[in-house]
Image (cartoon, rainbow, N blue to C red; front, side):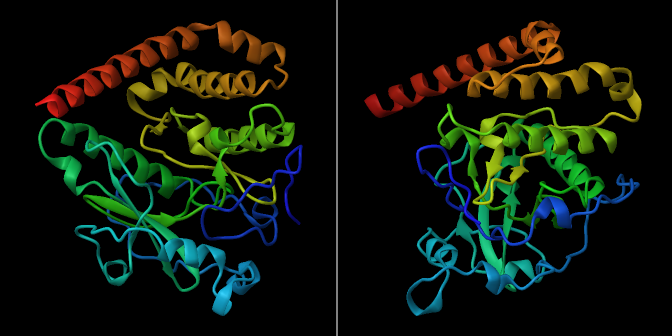
Length: 300
């Protein structure tokens, strides 16, 4: 069943995986794991549990729209991939990335689409401190959250990168603000509640990290800032960190013009709102400096 937005606009699928049977109905949450030793995750089978041919749309020569779109992408070189991932035909997932972050590639294996995050380029110099921290966070979080419906599944990791399943859908930011159904935010809240129940916080929830597929099902990506709040200083800050995720969801509701309950209204006026404003001002300052530096270089 195709998910139609008000006005007849349907959400196009940006990646593999398709709609098929409900991911939310099919997924079962797994128990907690000890993930501190999972920095090197052995390769897993990326094949879906169901027949991927069910997701193939009509296209020339029997190819799916997703395969045609993938073939049109620019090839990208990724470093240090272990077998069998090093033998895939990797294509650039996005056209441009901050040099201090990961290079993203997408490929097809056994009828399913997978994504690689290669941080090799980001490990040099001071930015390598952040790159290693982000990689540890994402690897541990995805390993511990295995089985949570609506987030990518970790397939393999190594010191400079990881491979995970690709979620279908378009970014929530690319959809009309006025007309997003309440059910989309309800699913996002359910995903975050399950993440919290596993003892983790996301720390970076915004409309660029939320995907909506053709069936109206929601996915959440980018766990570079995810933290385990069960131990250490994070346990002491647990309430504040959980409140940050709730603030981010309330902010998305406000941006989309969806109703807020009393607790969400308080979240928008609480201390996390001030933290968010400081962070937004910092990002704006950094962005303006980069633009100014780029302008000077072009002027030369």
